[in-house]
Length: 442
Image (cartoon, rainbow, N blue to C red; front, side, top):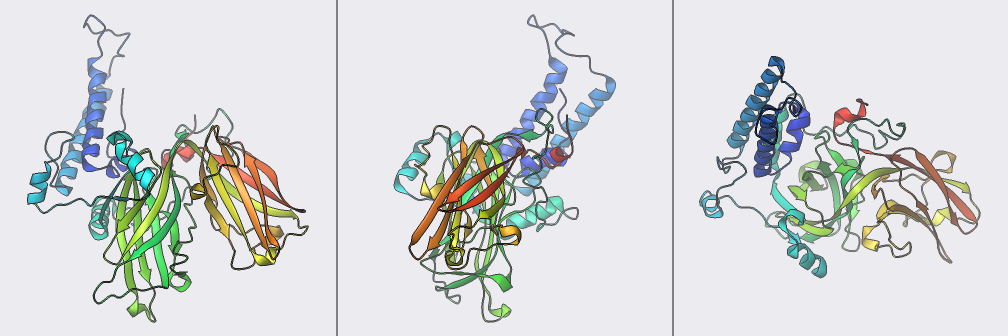
């Protein structure tokens, strides 16, 4: 069987986002697959044309070319990372790395029972996070991708890229896969550093973004310019997330880039809050601390298996009734696993799509809510729960509605809040395994 050319982005992107030894192991598997093309034999050890189609000279040349490209990729990786051992998939031992001054920062896992559960799992299923300095990471990225790509480029793939596909005729790389769900990001600690005193409240701006193997572009989770910074306090240290703009594919380790600054009286007085890169892999729900000199950022996330992406494309007030929109409200989404009890929603796994508790419920044209976040990964065999809360002087009015996930198409449902009703429209889509999958069909 033939394999993709390693110089093509569809091969290179997954490799770059893995740890170094995983990249080498991936290439080793590619070599084994290519070798299989030449060595298929029957059970008696004799070449059998019924098992192995005859390879033409042209295919032989392609296979040899692919092997040469793999060797070049391995050589490039070794030049970028001196700690790679020349045995496939092996690293120098810890003592040798220590002698070179190389260290790996261990994650800080929070939450008693969750920490114990994660630590007792096998390495293959353990949620892990590796942290590295931002400048070194960016230099490696630009060495590989410039001038064709810019580091700040945002992903252009729509979360509804496969919504209107005909069932049974989906693009070849549209998949039901594993997604990384980001629930919250908050400033957990402030560190007192000489010459850079930071104290609450903080006016924060910058970017928190994910990169996956789909297109290797930034998928923004938090994005604010200096003129629209967010005020953080000890009572509300959570960043107001506006993404991701599409589901984050996590069949390979996901990169989380964090670049945040604190606004000063003038731009020259702005201070760095944190500048770090995280590589997240594993299958567990967990909370992690990413530490820098000035602060610690807490990430709460989870791997959602066998998932599709759901986009809350519209939440429209169709019957106002007694809905007190002037007091604000809240829209929450939650992916319920198969068999989960409807009312037993884990509060820590609810995604805030809109939060206007400090002001009027924002609405645009045609009485549609202005959602700050719209995309959520949902288990295909589970359910999507959408909850709406409207605040009033007499108390909170709450309603919710359940959706059955689809691979494509659009579904609608009415959420009742007292005498008011809100029509919610969900666009369903499979996950793209590569950027090319949006334009190649069976």
